[in-house]
Structure formats: structure tokens, C-alpha cells
Image 1: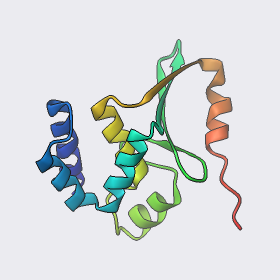
Image 2: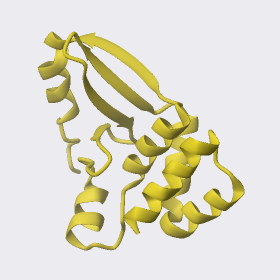
Image 3: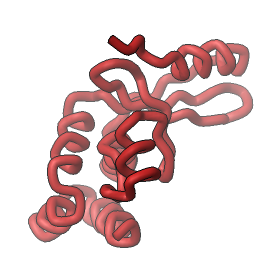
Length: 132
């Protein structure tokens, strides 16, 4: 299934948009997670931090409770940990899908900062929300 997601993302890059068949495919594979991801992209919640001069990147998706650090294969959200890794009920969380969609559609915010900010920002992103 992950291969199908990456195939659909490649279609989006090639088509420079989401065609009807690709939309149907992503809805079939990901369901509600796809729609949440698309909403995150269209709401400008995906950010790529570029650290200079190292050119290191960090992708962030702004979530309901905090900012989530994501890559193509990992997210630090609970949904990813419990439903993707532990229970294997999903192929991806919506944060990863949002990152992939935003990158394919080139709809993300680029934030350039100095390398000296890397550790500070990484600590900020790793702060877990307080449980009630």
C-alpha cells in the first residue's frame, strides 16, 4: 500500500496537480487521512525549515495540539506510533501525507534560519503536549 501512496504522489508531481483518478486512488488508500492531509496543505500548515549554511531540512506540519516533525516515513504524532507502527491499522498518519502532498504540489512555506537555531527548534518541536 505504501507503494501505491508514492505512486500517487509521483502522479501528482508529473501532472502538477491532483487529477480525478489520483484523488479517487488516494481516497481509497487513505480515506479520511487523505482529506485531513489535503486540508492541512490548503490551510498552509506544512512548513519546510531550511538551515543555513548547512542546507539541513526539517519538515513540520502544524497540528491541533503542537507542531509535528515529519519525513516521508516517520512522524512523531501518537497516531503514527499507535496506528501505523504498533497496531498496523494504517499505512500513514495524515501529517506524513500532508508533507508528501505539499512537496508534490509545491504548496508549503519555506522558512530559512541559521544553523545555530537547529537545536533550539528541535527541542521546541519535541515538546510533548501535557496529558489531561
